[in-house]
Image (tube, rainbow, N blue to C red; front, top):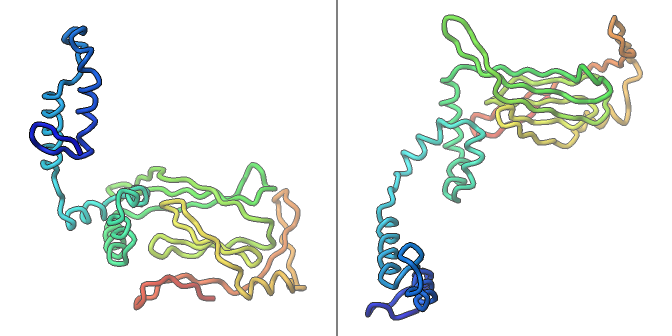
Length: 241
């Protein structure tokens, strides 16, 4: 602490005071434009900063929540780093339910998936999200694009219906991918027991698929489909088959 103007100053004020003391000796040799802060100027600057901090506007939490619930998913993910309070708010179940209710009042989004038409040897899916506007005529604009790469697999990839904007992409010999197309985030789930059975004991009765496609004939697997939904009681998402 330092004595200054018959009052004690905290450490946060020492920057201006030290700067004034360091340059006080050279002040007389400088022009008015070159002169550094004097002790009096440093004191005024400290008071001005403190006054500015007191004038900060505090927005009530309910207003903040009303603003956040209207933002796109990408912005919500970024704003979770603002503070622990915002992170806790955005990740809470109540906020998630309010956010989904608001999103369902907006125009629907289209979800397109296609494989790599250029390089068929790559196990890649291109995923495109489009925003639609339902007026006299429907228009669509590109919003988000992602790609998913899978290890080599047998059979076909399946895509579940959307549940709260989430979809599952799965096959019988690869881990299931749970994806949020709006944010591009996805997680891989462990292989289910029925998937391990298809890997360890492949079906001997395979049907070869042939056609005009120049690719070699592929192998077709028939299997029970996965289902994806939300438990209305617990609010948890579940997979069934």
